[in-house]
Length: 101
Image (cartoon, rainbow, N blue to C red):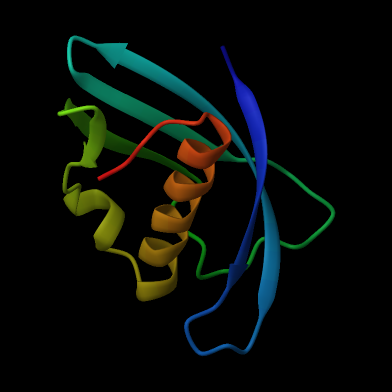
């Protein structure tokens, strides 16, 4: 089931603030969770640094919490994209009331 969330983000240099509308889906297979996110069109212009427009965050369920697995693809673009992906995951997990460790 696809859900939506608005993720606020302040750039690493504190120069710009943006609210990004994401569509996301959570899939679980055994103890592995995959959150797939797609940046949705919104009223705000999507900044050039925010790339890719679709990304995945994988985590493993262990001892009652989800522990994020490193994904090289999410860290290869630029600092703000990587930090935005982290913020998105935190916002989604909070909305879904899932514990992270």
